[in-house]
Image (cartoon, rainbow, N blue to C red; front, side, top):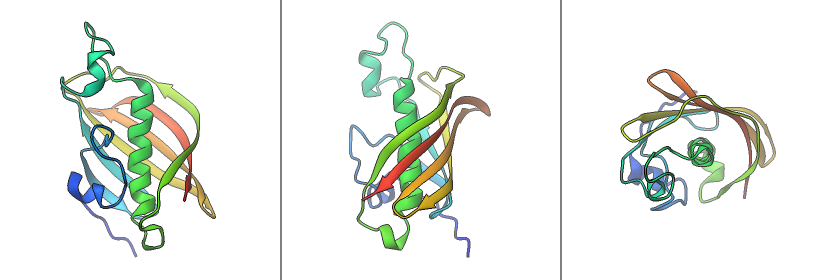
Length: 145
């Protein structure tokens, strides 16, 4: 049975343990628990990383975009009843490709499809886009504990 949900940041905090300043997704616009998720991050000029990356040329660090994808994927997995109250941990990143800079004012669409699960370990295929342009793609692995 497919159930699609939309969640705001307060509802996201009921699923994953991340908090400010490290909750890096703003909303979920589609989610099928255990299968796939589409989340959004609205990039603002006052986001904490721009103070040092880079003050005269603000660009979102690639590693944080990978973390955004991971947090979105964690929402899809931890929304499952059997995973309630658990935490998702990064297991690895494969095939990461950075294709476009992401800057203040951009809206980053984060899509993750869970492609494999074996016990508490899984793999997600992630894609982050801005206005339909690929910004980042990667395969991310994780463990639920």
